[in-house]
Image 1 (cartoon, rainbow, N blue to C red):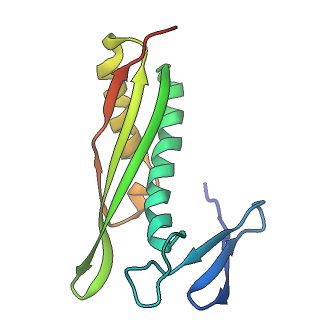
Image 2: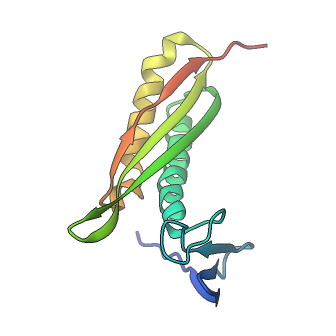
Length: 146
């Protein structure tokens, strides 16, 4: 099985460009982050998109595995923090910490929920495709039915 994902970038001016794809309806403006010379604050950077790729892949993988495992939940959110370091003279995102919060309906399902989260991190194709260490630190709560 092989799939292709085409993305194009067009430079606008200065340190800005637009990401587009023939198969997508929207575009994303991308800039150099403010930590670098002439960087721009408050907008998406390649570094944000890199961390977002791992985070969004983790979520979509979790949704598939939770569905296949029949794990019912009322809430899923995940904050991700990427750490940029200089390694052997080159910049690299060396670590991405995933901090999912998962609300389940039954305390008895807490171990199953943890297994599903761990399986999701291991199966995430983006995590498996990058050099960065990905650390999973979930929080599971029990939501009570109204």
